Image 1 (cartoon, helix red, strand yellow):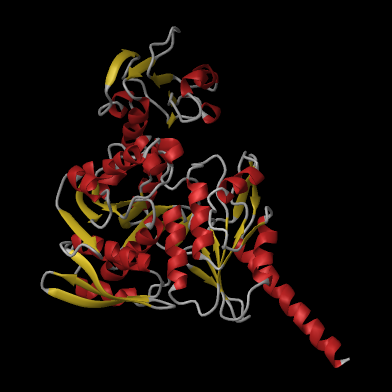
Image 2: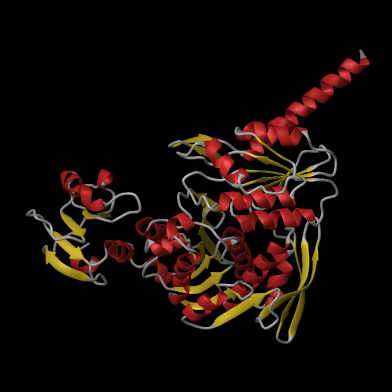
Length: 494
């Protein structure tokens, strides 16, 4: 592709290149640049691509896009913002695939994965069309799963993925849009048909610095969305409403002025049952995922489908047969008389939500196993320690993904939030041992929540990612328990 075509929507400050040259590809990683490609030097969170321009040239790059005039005789173009340039040039390289799709972007602290998956399910069943999904649990083209590294991919990978979805027949794409992606301009230039706001609670403050900055990042989605769906029960809804560039559909449980309101809510052990109330319409709905948060997720998804043109009379009956998402209030069968739930809850609000949901139906004790990630927002650790221990009958504090931090120090940070002397808890650093300890203490009717990792099948220890799946740990315990039970039964006969 000719360079001038790639640069059509890029803000150029200075050029030292023949824009008529043919480019064989674009790349922002100097380690994988190929001969004849253009290298875009991006200033990252941890490093700066400008440091690797010589490496890129050594790999065969024929032109550089950067934010500084280079003191070397090579073709280069100076732009105001190389992240924006990467996004716009990536879109051009793949033929602007986002413009060929009906795009729904979902942002918020909690519920993004559940809402995107539920919207996908509703649209597929209402329209019969192929739907793509981009998110934390993976990327999907219809039912086919593709690997995912980030909740929202870097702009080049994102447009490459969108192009693949177009080529494979997707009409709609539902995607999680993280605050990091919005700040780092990974989705810059993309116009969403619908932007959805779930909620905002403390998270990623190590990156954003404050809740106001975090909220401001989230609001960027609505400035680039033709229509919006917003939870007006949330304290930050006014900011999202102000940012909205087009028509808005609001939803709520507490605020009866919303366009869609959840009323007469019945929380049960295996589902939520509620009335979806809008002007001139009252529809009874049922979603087989327990917890008040499931009502919010259902309302967000119903509102999104409505604003896309689907009738509520077609949407609501579908909810009853929805099977949920891996790692979100996921029940693990044990056959031992108690219940085990695996949930991705890794924020104070999410942990509070899942424990509250279980409290609503547990016949016995509520036991929680959780930890906090290393190299991430430390302020939430004591908050989660207090929430878990005060809301659970017993808590086991353990590791999550410690990364480069000392696991023991993370656990001590969590412990610092425990101020009630009457709560029951223990600290076991090894996550496998922690889960087994909790399982071994369970009695019929108890519910064990294993929180923090959800769908993840790994632990990050130092700079290494090792295989670790909470489900497998539970399965090992159950198998061992049955072997021990059979052994004891045989010994009893003797």
